[in-house]
Length: 467
Image 1 (cartoon, rainbow, N blue to C red):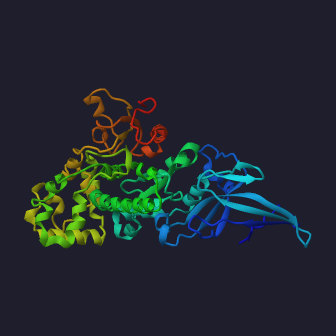
Image 2 (cartoon, rainbow, N blue to C red; image 1 turned 120 degrees about the vertical axis):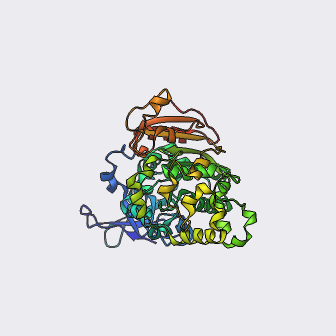
Image 3 (cartoon, rainbow, N blue to C red; image 1 turned 30 degrees about the vertical axis):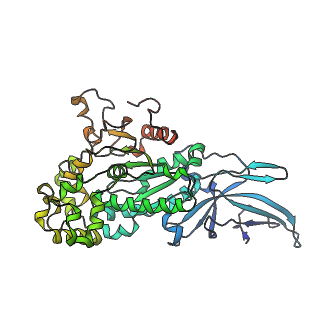
């Protein structure tokens, strides 16, 4: 297959340029190509994308088919790094000079063999992500994800913004309440601009509608993650797939911690007066409901980093504004029907007294309610041990250090106070300037990159603790 590149105003009529394009990793052809340099305008606050090697960097794009591997890629499309090199120069019968360019799909560093020597090809992984960001529609799902989750529920999933590979360590980023994967722009770009990190990690973003409670979304994210991990392992996956690193912001941090905790019956007993094995009369709903309250640490997780996470809840969830907002949260029918049918069969007397406030009247609490410091399940989760190392980033709109309970109690990011975000069990914890947006903090970004550079299996203090 050959493609004529679009005409450029500076091209001489006697010059003919032909591209022999690559196909993507699934064997499908790209439908469009853009010079990576065309994205210069949106790189302004980043270091200039650098690269050494032969060739010219393009971005190849095609539509997402919604089938096969495409289900784990962003719905906006498939965007890949392509490097073109000169294959042939010849004169045509029409007395034109024809340049034939060879396209190379770049999933990692590669070499081009020329005669008896090989040379590195230019590898620009960041520009394909920048094109995705220009096309991103997830911002349109942030408010519906909170207030009308039914509209966004079918978008829930784990989406890889780099090619899925069975020999690279996954880096999973999980957003918070009324949010989307767009918050991970800075961190994703930082990884793709770092030669060491972009060779080591494949970047995955989780998306979920944030109206339903985090325990329900956690169950669904765990299932999606299990499925993706199993598929990659079945396709010759290496040990790198068992070293997944998770970064979670705010409510995404609550979801992240459920990946590295064993609940036993603790959360179930906080909610119901009878164990699952006694509830044969609600078997149709029991399997899914049970997975919300009973789960185990995933063995393929290496470590977790929390950002601005309300482990102990947030008082703002009980404010007048939050309660008013709660009136407008419409939950997805699959969740409300599941809980309503289960509670109806169970009977309200089988719900513990502390949980009746949240599981009465249809049995469908929303996320704002669950983030209350009084919520029994949030309190219970906070008592469980972590089965993997964790790091913690606490945001502050004021002081960046504290020495005693009084001074620490003055620290807050405006949403989550210090003692809710604080993790005594963390390998390391830092305080950074933040108004509940540590994902944009240069100090937090520096800290995250230091954690990412650690060898898998290691958990130690990285650099100097930022105060």
